[in-house]
Length: 414
Image 1: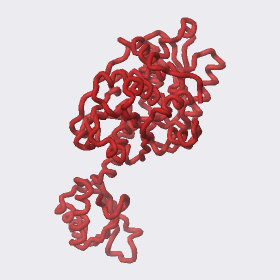
Image 2 (image 1 turned 90 degrees about the horizontal axis):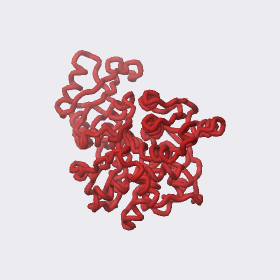
Image 3 (image 1 turned 180 degrees about the horizontal axis):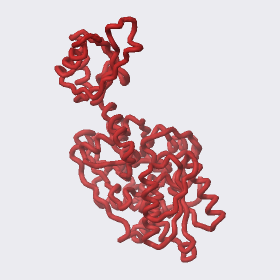
Image 4 (image 1 turned 90 degrees about the vertical axis):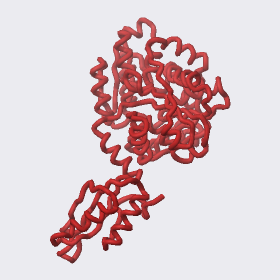
């Protein structure tokens, strides 16, 4: 554990310091998400900050706490994107030079925007840990001030200001759902919310591809965990910070670990129901209440922290496709059709009669089996959901087509 602490007074001081420099983002009621989850949902829209994420809060607070000599030299940080964006933007406003080290997998949109905002960007390593080591080396060799993205009391205090706003905007809130990676946001929210409202429930949501917080809880201290590729790249941290972990661990009420399909589906739900483009890390908050945690919180006034909107547009279509598949609204199956005239039309007619739309049909004549007069086809269809898929299967079977799913559960119903 660490002796460094962050208190409610630190967070309140940070809010005063940030006044006028950070947007106080809205926290509106969401009727469609409330209907979907069975909770009374509000969304804290911190993705409306100038650079698209809550990270501006901690970044600006840390910059404002530098002395004159440190401001002149500048700062360095490691970041997968949003912390770098926050530092670059506010460093520019405050006249403080900013160098950011980003892992090579960082989304292109975040890299390009950092450079446009005036930061010096270094791409280093295949993981956040690699980028962090390089940032520490630069701090030691150049005298730049290292501003850690989550293991820094100044940053934690800045992030905690979001909780102060939530408690004012939603005075009846009973639970706050927090996307969790390095735990800087989680720690700030826990300290502020629990100090003012000890009865409030804090739910941390982490990706299964980077379960650093739950691993630390199990061990009793921060530990290294392997990271797999995840749509929640902003949460892809292999080890939580010592300071935020010490603050958050005794205050968190529930930890939810979510998979990639759940993240994709949450992105789609937010697009459709809230007309909001959230990156995977932010959509994790909704994903966290679509399962067991949501049932546990049934009927409670709950705030989801939608804390980032910088999704990489080059993968957005893939995220949507995956989300639709997870929802049963895009389904793929294989079957055999006659390779004589009219064979394919019989299949498409059966699909149309079942009320589905064909997305794609791929023929596989070379590996279709011994019957040279039939061919295997992989068919992707758009559906109304899993129950609709079951009706499609029944219609195809009635028309003599034996189908097998290419992926997903079978039978294709909940």
